Length: 306
Image (cartoon, rainbow, N blue to C red; front, side, top):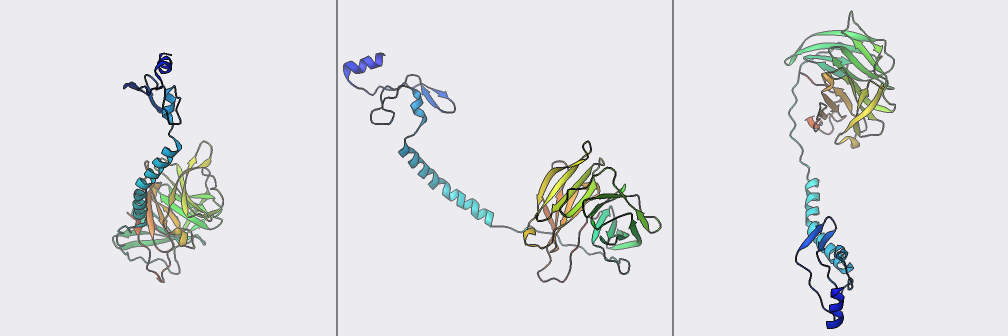
């Protein structure tokens, strides 16, 4: 009121704000005494601090242009950095002299310590050998019994063999082969995986809980699943992107280390990627490079050793 009376008697004045300002976060800075007039601006008759909240349209446009000019070089620099892909150094593979039984060519591998198990995913025929350095000591043949359908994946631990069958069914083969046969039964604990599988493997972790890695038809990434025993249902536990799979015609083959601590992903071009699955996880790393273009070799699967 005093300010209005002053202006009526002495004419319009631009009364000054007090210097002390109180922050009304996050909107604006509120003056202790509001300015009475701002002649020539859109808030010409502003009587409250709320007029501090907005910029005029010209100010907004000018500020936006300056911001774009400042940030544009940063955006271009980040884009250029993303385009520069440096291929990681991959260790050279070591060869081992292995003689599989006559007329046997494994299309699946599983390992436990220094033992390696090879399987024919269609016939169920298998062979077990123990590697010593760059050679093997003895080979024992066997046939899986009690299975119906093609085998998609195999994981081997101290309790036995866990097999993933086409259609998603899980089978367990307890112990070790006896007299050339290894009896397998449909798992009474693990339900079938979801349908539409292009590749899959199921294993047990250190607590005995089942864990799965699957590739669905048409996908180029690996989906991780954990079995919720209370509900007897598979629940999503993560996703792993596999570089370079979009250009390949076949889904990658999956393998779990003993106790499901790591996932190995073998692609049709011979590359192998490894992903830790322990608590906290980690990033995928390439442990085997792709074969040279035009190579006559056919890559089936991979497993860890040692």
